[in-house]
Amino acid sequence: MLKVGSRGSDVTRLQQTLARAGYNPGGTDGIFGANTKAAVVRYQRAHGLAADGIVGNNTGSKLFKTRNDDFWDGKPDGVGGTPGSFPVNGSNRQKLDYATNLARQMGLRITSTTGGKHAPGSYHYKGRAIDVAGSPSKMAEYYRRLAGTRPTELFYDPQGGIKNGRPIGAIGGHRDHVHIAY
Ligand SMILES: [Zn+2]
Image (tube, rainbow, N blue to C red):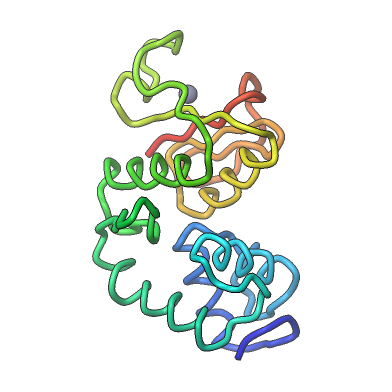
């Protein structure tokens, strides 16, 4: 069982698995602290598990089975309207599909796919971006869940911005929606 206060390589592996699944644990330092617990709770909520932040049999088997069966094959599962785990080895299209399904599952709206008032050359015109809107807390959660997936672009001003997987800070113009591209 892993919980707050646990340390070691099992915790590192847990943190890496959470990060790759899109639940940013705040680092992979092998120390189970508050950020790791918060990521576990988000994972548990998204998968219908008791959200206690403790990795016991149920959460552990789900998390690591997912890693083996689904996560590494690069195919989004999408079964039953749930987004499954992030397709870390999938195509950009599969990653964007994951982000789209995740937004819908969280009750967020897809406000733009292509065209609109975006600048020429925007990833929207290449079919690689979506804009997502909803309550600020849900948009923040959405940002946090995708921040660890090395997005090509992820912008939500209250949380910051990511370009080609690297934090760049808030870029402005993205207060009322989240922009995500792969
Ligand atoms: Zn956009």
